Image 1: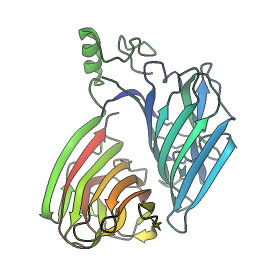
Image 2: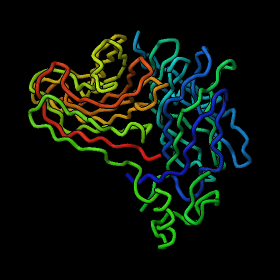
Image 3: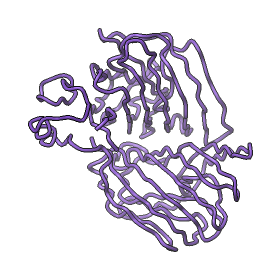
Length: 175
Length: 204
């Protein structure tokens, strides 16, 4: 597949956010982000999510629309959605300590096209508090303007990442 | 630091990705290991009425993420498209796998299998009958990471039941932090199957 590796980042222990800045450019319109082994560093279950960054490195904390299926190993599935979200929830599922990792992949469309919203699809798998979850969803940042990077984060204040998780970003080549 | 066409210290690519590169740019990317695609072929196994597709060298230390593609899987009798992991060369057969998927069918049927104590990863939720076919793409995360569970996202298209196309998606986990060193694709009913199974590593 014509994916060109643009960025490879490894998590360090104890951080709650990992910023990947200036990775989206006008060179590509479609990007693939893959997160693997995003284990928690504390015994606090948390979602592992993405927020988009603008050209100044500031976090977009509003204007997220999303809809997703929540598949659960121990019980029936359900759905969740919002037109006023604050992040791309669970795009790397969730994590906890003891090897319980968040993982997933996203396709991101038009982040650096001035007059377009930023869209993504995602598919994730992870474990929190011993419970397995897989999520499949879509999201849009319903505002225009360039998105040039992203932030992978845990939303629980008592949570953080362990060392060794991998975040890979690719651009879809046209050659 | 993003990788650029024209220099290691350049923050972004400076050439529109039209597919046209100078020899210098191609050489530079090649030297960095970034010329070419990101799916790096590890092994392709063609199974013709056989019991397993066993990947014995998954290069777990080189790749955080593996891509497994299964084409035209046909079992000799009913059973799931199944995946198991090996740790230190030993197949993990205990009920340490969990998973959940959704299946949507062209006849409006729905199936939402979930298993909190499975002894394999079910890559396709349908228990395919003879001559029903499945095609699967799965991402396998963290196989070589001894500090992380090994997890999977999978999506598939299959005929389930006869003359009824269906799609499914979902995920799975093996609930122990360990280094996985082999993958085995087989039929959950331990019958023979035919398929082409290809394993890639995702360049990092």
